Image (tube, rainbow, N blue to C red):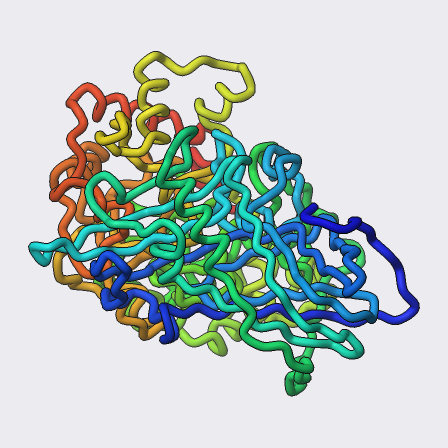
Length: 584
């Protein structure tokens, strides 16, 4: 509390406040990814990531009392366009100040995030800002590149976190709330680097993870608190109504609900509400996954390139299509998809239901039409199996086969491929113990590489953190100076996404070779060697790699072996991933 009395009062009439965060750099709008922003030290920087959490939003009345919106949280991911949130049901009144925290109060910061709803701003799968095994949240993450005096690019990564670094922003406003309003707040990134404590980038100031006594983190905290300002307050303009037909739930009345089980450490997944999981739906999807009639010449199924015994991937560098076509990327593993927000290496499919249909019509894969697939499935004459119309009726209530129902069944099956039965998971339950070498690998995995501060880790957690050992982001991990495959760029059209690909889970990594989007590495030893000596500089190299010494890390041979030993503990040993078992 700053001053006055904190209260939460009801009112007979209330309105909503839509808050929009805009970004600028001094007087100009911030352009992400561009190495053209000059800070007060005269250095040029780019911003490639700006994510933060907001909490404890409050409004001060003109009489000095505060209206608090307790347990209100918001997540902002500015580069990805998530820059607004709404505060609902505010009593009509006149307010002269808004106050909020950047970060999370202590109680929520140390609570168990696995209990949060799938769409809650603090769900780790929503924000990607949880410290995972260390506990607590990153309050604000800002990353990018900076230009050295010799013209060489390097990276910086500032992660502000821990209870003492909770930031408070208080801004004067003139808000007469007699209708829904929009509040536009500006965050000036130039002030983050220069407002109260000018920041000069050097090898000693390229990163902070807010450890106790970290002077740089304290300076950035104070800079951030003074970097916000009110841009405008205006009546909330109603957005044009977009006519959408709501997705209909199709489920047979006799279908049996499927018991979806996950690790207690996993965040809650956002399962599709319009496609409830059923035993019959999963069984149908499992059979369709092995169905060769999905291809143009009835020779190839989904399982042809995604073998369950290899965590639904294959040992080839590139998959071969139904007619002998050679693909351009390595087949991705298909497990824990319930926690993914986009699909394919470049993220071009926003949903799993969309993704499962694309290989059918892809000329390099099955090269069939959905219309023809539906016709083939409807007239299946194999006397040894249950006819598809009968199975579709058990799932959806009627025997009609459509491409949408085909996608829904495949979606159900793939969503149930949940992997959390590894030696590492059993060690968390106290059922086994990691060896000293594996424990050393775990420590290396979750420790930053920052020799200037006595940290000599492998820095894996930045991209592969949390119990899922993955993130929702796309990253350039330094495979090539000039990308042969532009990756995410083909989807977004943004130059800053060139050479970026989806960050995969490292669970079951020992069984999903070859590695990378193009399958260029055959062994884990080759992968680790890449991060030790093979990282190539480029304009879109991830800042958490760009801030390392040129070429990569300098871990000892023993530490490299320990890291691989830990990665081997992430292998799921449950039966469903050990053999192919299509249902008939």
